[in-house]
Image (cartoon, rainbow, N blue to C red):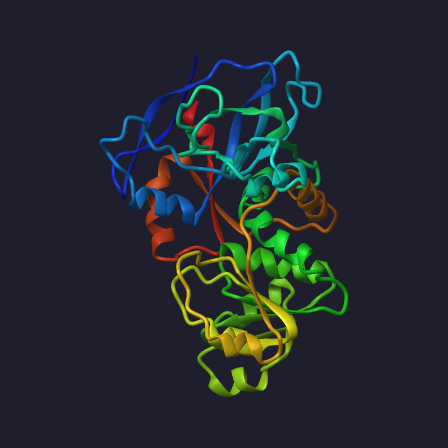
Length: 346
């Protein structure tokens, strides 16, 4: 086994520095020195649900960038010194219809997650990227384009691909009318990508407070969802509404904004929802969802972001301030993504 250092859950609100074990390199593995790891709302939820009596520790973190420090004998795609990015999926069955279609994120036997997942060979629990080293199958690591800043690129590996997949699958491009509900870690990247794809892009936020931020991100307009007149005026306007709101909320006001044959894509809240059939019926509207991305889409997203100078708006903290990042994220006190600098773990 290999030994590294990382941040392990010590309860629902705190993490402690700990020695962690990584597997020895398998023939198709690479070892990655993690330089930057994003802090995702998923990490917050995992910490909230942590079982301190569990046999395996919880080490969050599933969007990171770093440098290859070792390769297994069968690896031909990476060499020591290459810059790479890793997201929230590190393995899949490779044989089901979804995997064969390049949608490993929908693997029929469930993909192996970067943390809290089950290793498909030895049954161990995966430990995430709040650490200095990670060992991963080379096919689930991605070359990091040199045009991308390693710190600001880390959130692309979860937040970025999560919004990229629906934008692409729903055919967003020049002439499309897109609205993005919620301007946070997911929403700000959805705006940047929709604009770069050529769409006329509008932000939907509760008030007008984020209008300047929306403009800076490239949005053409902002609608205040608390303003009933603005919402009524925008009825049946958008081909695609990307809903990144993370808390439970009423979908009806957002469905009213969707144009005939358009789609509301629910990304932020993945719990139970209630929808009136008539809200879909009137205008033949569609309700969809998406999560993460397959290998093909992830590689495409990274190259698109490099070609269009897209990365996350971030605040970088030393990893020793992980508790501060978690606490501030819980209070939504970040614009728009925390990234941990892991170099202080040396």
